[in-house]
Length: 325
Image 1: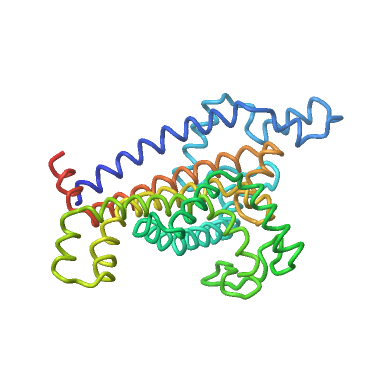
Image 2: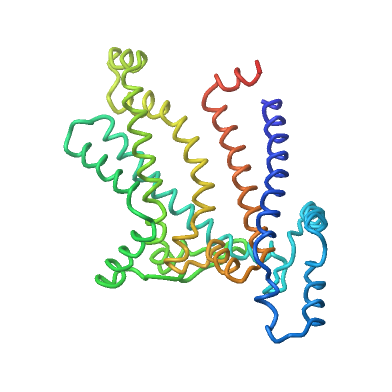
């Protein structure tokens, strides 16, 4: 297990370094923030002073190595617009995004796994067919359109839930969270549901396919032949074995939920890092964009590492394969 962990850590460092080059070069090759940050009527001396102050007078590789040196010390640069450390600004917004992502994944698991089990156990029933038809809609409908429809129905027409914002928050170890207050939950529900629909459909289909496959295995037939109750067969022999691919996919999808919650946060005016990214792109605030992308890459790598470890714990064959390799 230790060998597997060391190998994964070394691979993660290499990936992070490669992505830092791609992200930095890609972002810094686009546009000129001076055109936005400086008054168009400013003279040449003022523009040159601003360029030097922001470090844009250096070559691209000098800027990169300066960024890399700072990143190793936990400094991802200063925001051009806010004149604060980019990482500090992002970390202030990160709890809102993590809360939204956690809420979305919770709904996807809470609804997706039971619905997928029902569809797998009763594939020819009306309920099973209805669940699969609903999963197709979850895959097909655009996130921004679903968000607008949710706002129109539940916020405008029915007036049951708020359309935007985060609501009341309480501090937990210095971190503001909204899911512990009734007003916060009401603000969280619609964006979390909107973000969860695609993942929910994915979990339903994955669980259904796994259930259909596991039901045909000899150990399930043997368990039924021994006279075990259906609930025990499903809960122990079926559910435990389909959790391996489900855990893998959910781990990977958690990273994508965090990274790609931009649309949902924009539609519902959720104050997370996704909305911060959109605002920063509009203002060509390069340090914020680079810090956001690097933090996203780091989270993907960390989540993949955790998923690999969980996968090896759930399936001993993975540990044996890694040991032989």
